[in-house]
Amino acid sequence: MDTIDNFLIDGQPVVTLDNDLFLKKDGKTFIDQIEDYFKQIGGIAHCQFGDIILDRKGAQNDKAHGMSRVKAISFAAIVPTLEKGVVILPLGQYHTNDKKQETGMIAAPILIAGERYICVVVVICNKKEKRLYVHESFLFKKIHEALASSLVHNGNAMSPELRGNIANVLNNYLTSKQ
Image 1 (cartoon, rainbow, N blue to C red):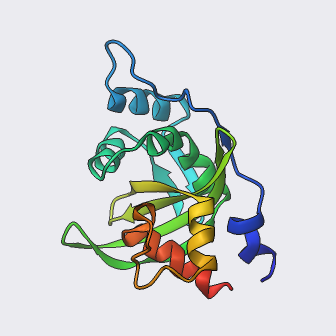
Image 2: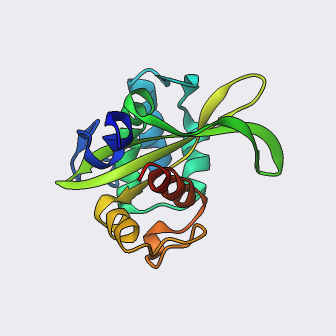
Image 3: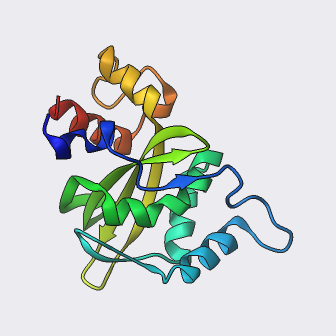
């Protein structure tokens, strides 16, 4: 593998995060906290796909796809992932919510409380704008174990953490680079 191909496996994390991000706060919902965070950082990320809108709508959509503590923390990894990550799925015509829209994925290694993860951000683009659609963060050692033992097949890994469309794209990207 060349340097760019090793980035997700061997590259330096694009951000280091602590476990205390986006904990419950009195008077603030989780979505309120994420919206405030996005506003604080300017509400835009610049990446290979162009300027990506980060706002309440994106946070709500992302949360609707499920939420773990790691995923909650890794909202703070979205901008560094978009800005410093690699494209694992180019913008193209994919069906999202039964609409034909351009969708693409960018991934980067991140560190949460000393553990290495790969964060994947899905961007959705229509004629008017490009915005955050959803993101996931996968524990690197689970990905590494699955790749090393060839457990991943057709997007379904033996580990429940590695199931789903985003995991499938990440798996396909990584296995194509080996």
